[in-house]
Length: 436
Image (cartoon, rainbow, N blue to C red; front, side):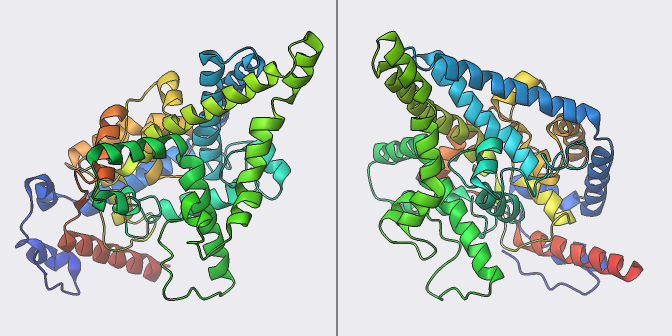
């Protein structure tokens, strides 16, 4: 890898600085890439999309909420009458959609500027503050406060950097290096897929919340503790966790959802079974359906979420960039992937995570805005020869699993170009500050 000698006037000297770099065939598009023009077009499109949001976006949100609640109603009303696929699928889809679509976009502020009910749909109030708000707005394994820190801030603004808490290649390094038969690795991946929300996501998001509070309060982290290391249920259980105790994880994070969702929610079936002469069988049918739905929604979430930023065609980066800079916009394309898209039914089943490129560019837009924006972003990327990957989610699953087990590795973005674009961002920022 070449190490260019950058000049202060980056815009004038950049071609000479990078011309001696040896690029792979997949990176040759960088030679003629117009970084400035691409950045300006994406920035302008984001502003236009935000200004166009209004009643149609609110109506679309209400439609998706209705779909989600309808699945919940069917699942809850049928789950006592035998273990059955209808209840399991409906309960799973409700849990999945309430997280990936409704909570996800509201917690990013996607409806703050266009929804008339600012109190209900504010990212600073939705599911926050009390257990009652968590229960009514978004009740899942993860604490909403913790999700907001880990996902909305850390993941979105450190995408595919070493400090990205959701970087699959980093988090599964132990599995990639594990010297065991390959079927053992695939068995472990299957376990993670069925349990990942409570085994990985809830403990790790809570770690990020505790870490953010420590930094806010000026608490020094011991030098032997790496804040970027993931915390799982296993590491918390065996005391391999500096940030909180296993008891705290259970009582504060996991127990409320475990007890209410799986054992208190089905209680009406206990009374109904007693009245109809079925004893406790209806209640336990409901409990079984809820647990089976939990496995299904974990697998569904794994398929739609974990695959967004993994694969041997996804880039990694060495240095951080400023939010909404040119480098930021480019990285969201190069480290994200879209799936099949375009209709509410298809997008609902993907949890609206099939617009991952557009969502990462502008996290605070509505679901409807992403539907509108995807063809426009694809066109901009096509004109600038920027790799825009849109594939089947099942193909992305294979590429993600290959990363997890160590069959393949992610691609490092060429360092001279990474440094060049960061320097250009600094010039643009300095000029903007000077004009103020």
